[in-house]
Each structure stands twice: as C-alpha cells, then as structure tokens.
Length: 128
Image (tube, rainbow, N blue to C red; front, side, top):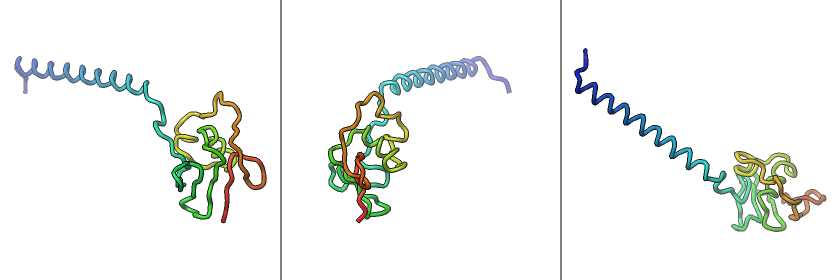
C-alpha cells in the first residue's frame, strides 16, 4: 500500500504538530516544577496520628489511642523533624522526614522543650 502525495502531506503535518505540542508541554512542565515548593503542605501530626484540638499541640496515635504527643509550644518543621528522627526513634511523617530535605539546615537550636521519659527533650509522650 503506497501513500499518495496528499496523504504524505497530511501525515507529515500531523507528526510536526505532535512534536511541537510535546516540546511545548515539556517546556511548560519544566517551568512549573521549578517554582513550586515541596511539600506544599505538611501535617501537624505524624502519619497515623490525629491533631485532636486542631492546634498541632496534642496528637493521638490512631493505632494506639493511649499514646499522645504533647508539645510545649507550636512546633516548627525542624522540631518535628528532630522529634520524629531522634526522640521517638523513627516516626514516619510525610513532608517532614520523608519526601523532603531536612528542614533543620541552617536553623538555630530549638527552644521548644517538654518532658520525655524523665529527660529534657522536644516533646512528651504519655501512655495513659
């Protein structure tokens, strides 16, 4: 099956338009990605924990309702990172210790303190 001149012309124009559209889409996507911050929103409590007052100061573990985290003041992302990677061992927290760079780079030491197992720490975990 051989294509005549009209069909070849239509096919060539369609391929050229497809290439132009793909290049334009790639340029638009690359410009958009460079201007966004990640993550766009971080949770006030770790994964599988719930902020019971809506303030981010008291979080309840949804898998073990007896576990709560109580912050002395509103925690910064750096406070959350330090607590979720050191104080608590490793507590998964999307946007804080997973999927984003450390928020503590260039930050001064935290002043958000509370009691944790009888020692000074970033937060207190209570088992009732």
